[in-house]
Amino acid sequence: MKYGVSITDACISWETTEAVLRKLHTKIRSVLKERIKTLEKAS
Image (cartoon, rainbow, N blue to C red; front, top):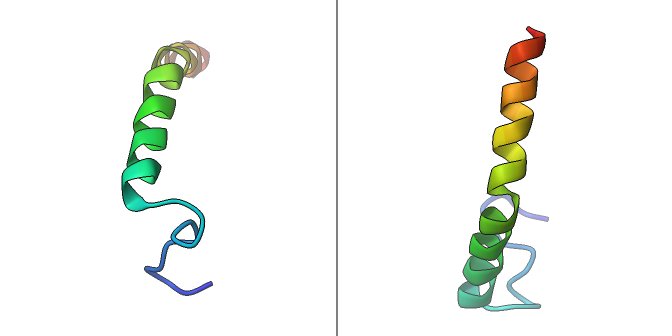
């Protein structure tokens, strides 16, 4: 591996990578918000 070089370039395009990350963000956003609330209550 080399700093600044994507390890997915040989597998998927930048457009596909971006789409996957955006979809992941949409799917886990609510879960992450709940985890933050839980951590804030615990501290």
